[in-house]
Length: 210
Image (cartoon, rainbow, N blue to C red; front, side, top):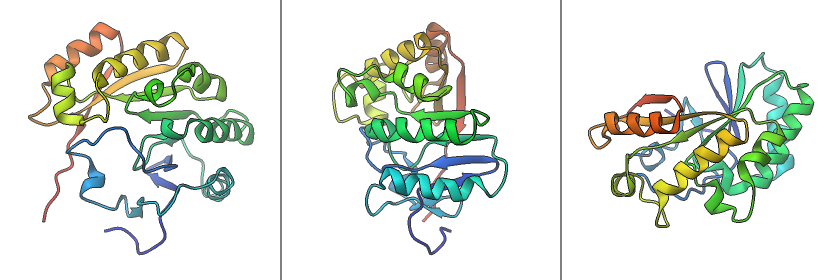
């Protein structure tokens, strides 16, 4: 059950602090939790509007004082690289505010270069203080990826592979993740991860009950 409160920019699960800076996403994954629920961990993540940088910083400043967090993760009900400049400025602020003591991660669908044409996205993330990225890969080729993730443009699978390669080259720690469900051939996804020389993290599917 989600708390009866305003939508949250900052929320937490266990000892990780998460940032929900947008609800926009270039995928329409049929299995995405936001299709069925308004939040996770008791937090409402359905934004009424996109927060300003100052609003993100203010809510983050309050949360940073609650406890010693193990990491800060850009991950919410949307694709954070859709607001790349906001992501970068907030990441720089976290790095300065915490003297680089808290690792910063971005969970992404890997469409950053498509959403920000002409930008060196991975290098910019690294320079802003991001140290790792977890890239969703719920398919092993263009056809399976399109069926599961329903990207709003063609070539979504190739875009993800390109992002992974560029993220590695930029010096980021990279993993790919996939949801365990019948529609994802995990052995073939594992083979793709191995071909990219990155680890695969398998996530459990969260079923929805009515």
